Length: 121
Image 1 (cartoon, one colour):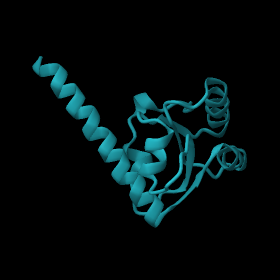
Image 2 (cartoon, one colour; image 1 turned 60 degrees about the horizontal axis):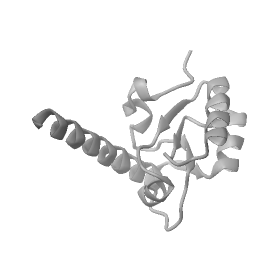
Image 3 (cartoon, one colour; image 1 turned 120 degrees about the vertical axis):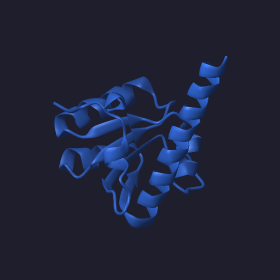
């Protein structure tokens, strides 16, 4: 049972780590929240990293992943749902998709694991 507890603790630690980095991005950098704004930033090539909530509709998720692949932008599948993602951004509303255009003082773009990214050639 010890290894299972270790894995869940590491996963929780990772999500807390991402939440802390995301809060720093919202404070010092620039991010756009929402599907339409994210798609616009991907088309313009401004997005550095895209975060997708766990309960984002599959068609929308695959469309974002496709555009991110074309733009050579990283995609991270956030472990929480849209409520948790909105809260992690410091907002009082739900957010299923967000795009980081300027990371600011945060190193979130470099810190996301290569396994959880897609869209890199």
